[in-house]
Image (cartoon, rainbow, N blue to C red; front, side):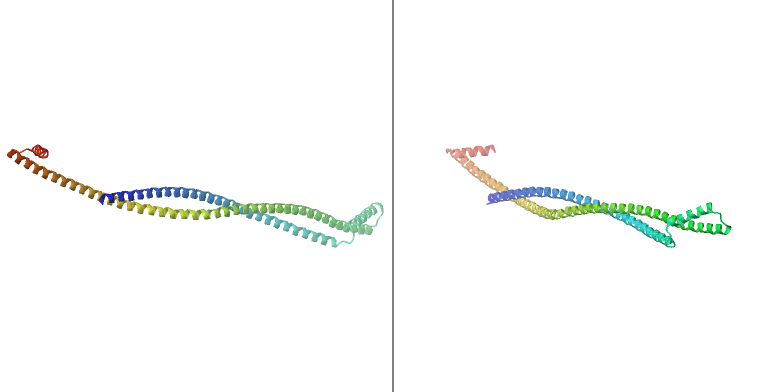
Length: 286
């Protein structure tokens, strides 16, 4: 029965050792998967962070470009207002005139011709010069109107330049916005890809913890079985020793009895058996 128990214990210990070894292999495989997933998550998170940084950089540029575009529009509006003011000023200047410039020039030319070719009294000369001065003042208004036209044209050119620059900046904003959108979508995609991997990683952690618990439980059970095996083996050895001691005691007793019988037979002159003779020699040798 004891030997059967030792065999059972030995088989149970082998099964547990095999189970522990198998669980260690599973544990190693799960750790490899865990390491691979962590690397994938690291790569995806780095990609997401890079796209976020690129998106934020584009958004920063967009904000700067919008500020520049708004400033250009503001400057263009200011020029437009200046142009309107100059047009109003020109209209106001010309509103006081009834003749056109060519008529005034013709009249001025006639006065100069008359002044140079016709004898004039002092009164006539005074009136003529007065009229000439009035014509020159009116012609100065036309001159000022032309200067205003030049200024308006210059401002219009500047205004068009500002509009073109603002349009160009607006196109840059649209291009940057598209790039920002691409980086944002790539960032979201990378983060979405992290979700199932993170869930799988958590499941693997649970499995690893479970297997570790199983291994520890198996080791504890194995330790108990090894202790039991040692206890049973020592009991078996003790029984064998006791049995051998009993067998030895019986052999010695029997040998002593045979030796005594042999001594009695020799004393009586009787013939000894082989066992009796051997027992007598053994007793003398001991």
